[in-house]
Structure formats: C-alpha cells, structure tokens
Length: 499
Image (cartoon, rainbow, N blue to C red; front, side, top):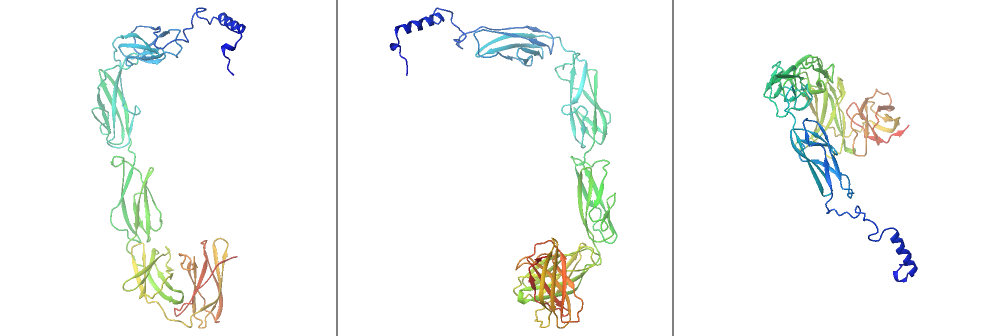
C-alpha cells in the first residue's frame, strides 16, 4: 500500500524535513560529491611524469600517471607510439629498443595524455660476429644429400646487444666434400662432419655441421631371372636411399627368410634354394624394411594317381578322390573341374607342403545333371602343373558297401569321432570317408574331408571307428564307404552328440 504525502500528519512532515537538513542533503548544506556525478564528456586532469631522454639501449624507464580524483572508471592504460624505439614492458615501465623518438601514451576512458621521449644512445660498435642457422639448433645435422641449411649472421656490441643494419659474411667450409657453400646456404654432399666459417668486419665465427644420411626406402631386385630349386641361387641387388633419393653410404643390411631350409638368404643378400617352394625375403636397415617374394623354378610337377569320380545320383553329389605324389614337397593346390563342351564348375583346394603322398579329395554338391567329365589340375610352387581327367561313374552298384548304423560324437572342444557298422557282401571295402556337413546343402572346407583306409574283413558285416581333430561347428558328420571297384555307398549323415 503506497504512502501519499497528502495523508501524512503535519508533525511527521516536520520530522522528515529536519532529518534531511541535519544530514546535509538540502542544496547548499554541504559540497556536492562530484565523483558520483562525473560526466565522461567533462574534461579531467591527466598527466604523465618521467624521464624525457635516454642514452642507453635496453634501458628501463619508469613513468607515473596522475589522474583526476573524480575518475573511478578503472586503471590507466599504457601504450607507446613507436614500440621499435620505446616498447611497453609493464604498466608505466618501458624499455628503450633503438634511437629515435616516441610518445608514452596513457588513457583513462576517452581521455588521453602523451609524454615525449627522445632516445639518443651513442652509435653501437660491433665487437663480435655470431653465425647461426636461421632455423634450428646452432650445430645442425643434415639427413640427406642435397639438404641445405640457411645461415644468418648478427653483430653484437659490448653490452651484448644486436647491432642493427645486418651483415653479410663470407662463408667457407672446412671440407667441401662433406658440406658445400653457396651464398648463405650450407648443403650436404656426403656423410661426415665439416666446420662452416663466417667472416665479416675482421670477425670470424664457426658452426659444426654434421651430415648423417637417414635411410628412408629400400629397393630390391634379383640379379638374374629364376631361382632353380634343389640347390640354385640368385643374388638380390639391394640399395637403401635417403629422403632425397641418394644411396646411403655404409648402410648395414640384415636379412631373413620366412621359409628357412627351403629358401635361405645370407648376410650379402645371396638367396639359395636347397628345397622347392616359396619364401618372402626381408631386407632391413635400421627401422625400415623391404620384401621380395621368391618361388623356386624347375623340377618336376606333382603326379596324379588313383583318380576316381562317382555320381551319387540319389543325393545329387559328386565324389572325387585322388592321390597326389609330390617328391619335391612343394605341392600347392588343386582344382576340380566339372566340365562339358560349354560350361564348367570348379572347386579349389590346398595341398600340404612337405608331404610326398597326399589326397586331393572333394565332395561336391548341387550337381543336378551329368557333366561330360571330371578334371583334376594340380600345381606346385615352382609353377609346374599336372592334369588328369576321368569320366564319372554313374552306374548303380548293387554290390556297393552300405552303412547299417552311424553314430557321431563331439569329444571335448576339438575332437570328433564316428562309430559305424557296415554291410559289404563282396568283402572288398577299402575306404571310409568322413565329411563335415555345415547344413543340408553345403560341405565344410578341408580338413574335414578325411579319407581313411579300411583293413580287409572276413565278414560281410563289420564295425569301425574314425575320428579327427576339429573345433569347427558342425551340424552333421557324413560317412561314405568305397570298395575296390570304385563303387560308393550312399552318404549317411548324423548330428554329433556331445560325449
């Protein structure tokens, strides 16, 4: 609720007026406080005091600002009209930099004052010459031939101050085979150490320049074509370069091979091949390296024997078996081709190195029609190839072995075992195949195609067990029997039971 003057009693008004008079708040009762009533547009007193001349460079001059007491807008702000002559160090403190004239400037709000200073030091007399790289450490290192460093020279007086005006010395090198000089640049010519001397005005200064080529990349090249297996050799020509592409003097190479005993390399880069196969040769200098991939040449190709192929028509499968003889132990892969005159399908597999006799087997699915033939092509790491072909057996073999019962087990994390009972009236069963099936249509990759030999049996019905090590996730294990005539039983597949 507001208080209006008309509603106040006369006595209250008398008391209020008395209080105002007693506090000096009535005009004329006391001087005005101009600090709180200061208008920024009103002139106010601002002055600077301090030295007006200086006769030394890098001398410190102190100045004081006198500010009108009515000003309460903050501390004075100091600047210099010519920092090259007189530079501000801290508030009110300046440093003389060169001869000349400058104004010390102080400002408070919109108000400013200037104070003129003359710097008139005696002329500087050089007493020393110093040369340095324009950038980087005083005694630089150059890491590639052709790399340069630009030199800068400075005169100093007796107080250690820089003498203005610049200087252009004459530069020389103590060893021009290491460092050459052109104008004000020192350039690396080869590894070593040289002193660069600069002279001017009767003064001399020197810096040490080190040239140490840093390896950046390596090139490798065989001196001759081919690396004959069984004792052949080839020299690898090798060079390491710095960042500008100049060969590095005195570089020490280290060598290694990832297939020792088959392809070796010595400390000179000479590669020898006592065996047959492939290898990656690595050359290293300090922290950089380069590799060369080599394979032996010559020798004899792998031989294919006992090639069989049969259509399991009822299950839309083709079963291909073969034995590959590779006396040199460098067999690499094989390709099974299902082909007719127009189209073909192929499946790739890998053979084991160092094994003279090994199977190249494949169980192929999704074969919905009969092709004209089955072709097996196998090769080694010496680029030799052998191929063989056979017509797939499509006849029904009433006397082929059959499987009476099959049980498969998962034993631990990495083992599989299959127990089976078979019926073979002709007593000529020779093989049992164990095949890992991932699902109903696909076949798991090798090594889950495993062929086992069966010992001759004297009874038409017999039992056996086969197994392998594998940690693959397998939905079903398939079992197939083959007899001496090449006839195959139907595939029986069962899921593994954890034992």
